[in-house]
Image (cartoon, rainbow, N blue to C red; front, side, top):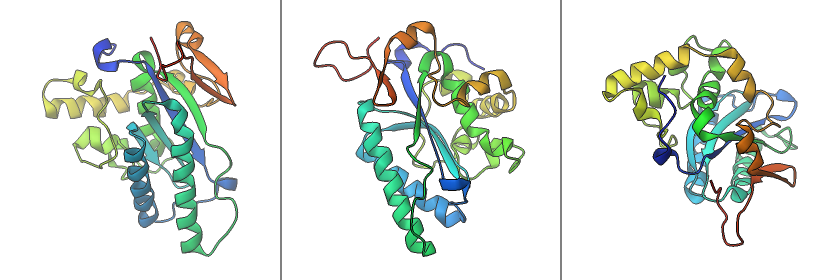
Amino acid sequence: MPGLARKHQLGDNLIYHIYNRSNAKKVIFKTKKDSEYFMQILKKYQKRYEAKIYHWVIMNNHYHFLLEMPDPELISKMMGGIAKAYTHYYHKNNGTTGYLWQGRYKMQPVEKEQYFLTCGRYIERNPVRAGLVQKASVYEFSSARFYCTGEEDNITCESPVYQDFDQDQEKRKDAYSQFLENFDQEKEAYFLQMDKPVGTKDFMKRLIYKDGRYMPRRRGRKRTGFVL
């Protein structure tokens, strides 16, 4: 595992762990076609809102993303669009109606410099914890394959700390694969309680709780991004 990421790579140190689950935990990604369609929706909205999705996974009844956006206040519009688009697809193809999602998606602020890799690993290890696969890299619908095999998925934006695993491309893939295997249950527990931000005390001070969400505290009237 590489050391702390270089600050010039990371820039503003706020990212968001996004999660949502189906209503009553029912299976909503039933087939490969369903997951692929959701990926198409994700690509569309990712481009529209200039979102950088560094790590992601689609399970049978929920999803996780680790993303960054120029203006965090636009995340709600992006996620709302994704939810509505997949709901329309699902009901049309299954002859159903009603609420598809359990409610409003959850959004957990994560301090990038300290917890970037840990959160990404937590997300990509979801299929392993669920007993679907033995290794995260073989699961088809996650960013793990991008980092472990180099397979392009047109969603994953390369992590700014990925290059730190090794200068050699093949060794870097192997090192990242090993990183996924050497997980820390105590650290992974940080991402189970989605209502709590993950970061240092100084990081917490830079957040403000607004409309049920933690957002970056603004400094100055014209600034909209997260300011160090």
